[in-house]
Length: 302
Length: 69
Image (cartoon, rainbow over the protein chains, first blue to last red):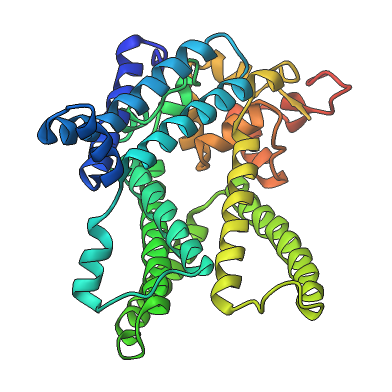
């Protein structure tokens, strides 16, 4: 099976997906008062200013992608991703400067659960973990639901391996389970953050949701493990081993700092966030190492 | 380990996904074996050899030895 990955129409699908994602993100936010005030000073009418600021994330993010693709052409994968990260960082900074994103989320949660306290560093970690898990889970769900078209729609790499886009039924089933595991993990993290930020009378609801979502995620992980092949299982084991080493060393150093009064006490929620992030990073690196940079290794084979 | 998997697969006009389905493993595993990033377990090596009707030594060899030689 041969699919031309670098056809302009295929790459345009990736750019279009990014644009739709940026538009959806923009729709969740509202312009910051200081930016609106600055635009008013310049004589821009309020409605035009609001529309312009809402369009800004789409323009910035798509420009970053197009510029990154142009600058990265012909360069190594590492250099390309450094360029993407730098340009993405600039686009993200200006988007964050001009807009308060996801403003409706805290309002909706407070309407359902009651007022939330200001988030601590651990709460921010839980929210970040939850957002990454849910976002990644939804991307993987698209792969499970639509297969190759979804793979092209989220791919921006000009010289990706066409074989990687050949996603079949069995693989889509695995993606479906992975997606469910990630989303339930994300819901558990967010619910735990909400429970931590809730007043004494309202912690029970989010705690129960966190418990159910966490149990569902654990169950899905067991089902997924039973369907993995030997390489996938090895990657999981390696990721857990590496993250366990890192977390153990970190906990040891932290305990000394804590005794010396240099670091605060470590809560169970903080341990959960730290271990989860360590596993996520280790799994990403180990999986990418097994899958990536195939061209360099091809010389060894055949 | 070096291997002849890509050549054998190409001779039969199979994609990585085709071979993965026949071996009941993921496409990523086939890619990792072909690119030398992963050495399969002995049971999987036997399954691969059985599928291509060759010996394991004809498909896999240490880095300093030519496969089948």
